Length: 158
Image (cartoon, rainbow, N blue to C red):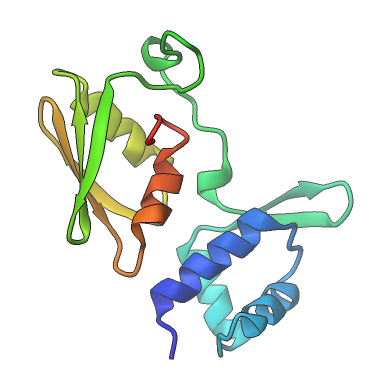
């Protein structure tokens, strides 16, 4: 039996990957993925994920998640030297068991942790920042690749 976390991650991937206009379509996609759930459960999951709807030219309105919305970066961190990532100061990231440790240049950890928290990504439960280190705590059932994919919008990981 698949877990709630797996179901929430799958809902997120479906909504991010295609234009879904109603719960019936989403429920059918989840059944195809091997989940057994009711419309009421799906409704609670969408509420938990803070899913909303936005206008779409083809389908009327489609689901969108808070993590898909544009993050507004403060001007002082809006661009690094090459313009490809919104944050500079990132040095490396490594995993220990279920948690990630992000190394930064001295003095950058708090601002980077703040921007990670502002993403409001479901995959990340929370972060704790020091001067040059961030402890990142993913949710249960979230893979390392899921965490890397979420953070790839802020800084290079490879």
